[in-house]
Image 1 (cartoon, rainbow, N blue to C red):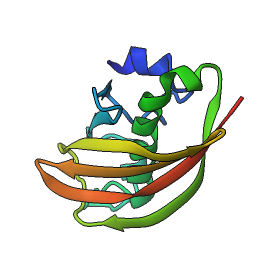
Image 2: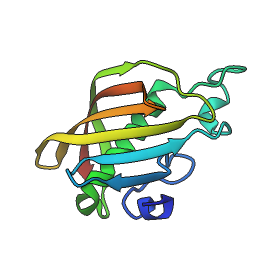
Image 3: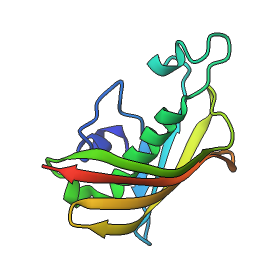
Image 4: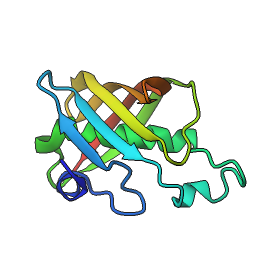
Length: 137
């Protein structure tokens, strides 16, 4: 799905919509993609002369990609992070990079979802971790 289709699932809008395209895979996991253009607001001061996507933004990209797995549950609701566990940053993401994000639900309890996410650039691991969130309506 493209950005317009993603907007039908996620309540996020520019400049906080951080998934360019996404798909639900046959095994129930999701794949999202985001290309770092270089003009994003979060790069302006992080870091002058050496723009690097902040780790918290990488987590947000992974979290937004997770929501594709829960499209039916997301209708008219808002996802809120409830935790980040064992998140590690392995390689910086820079302007021109396309992040490939893979995520899967590992556990769910009522409106709480626990996921495992990884993002990579050209097959090189950028960030990975366990993210949890609640879907509130």
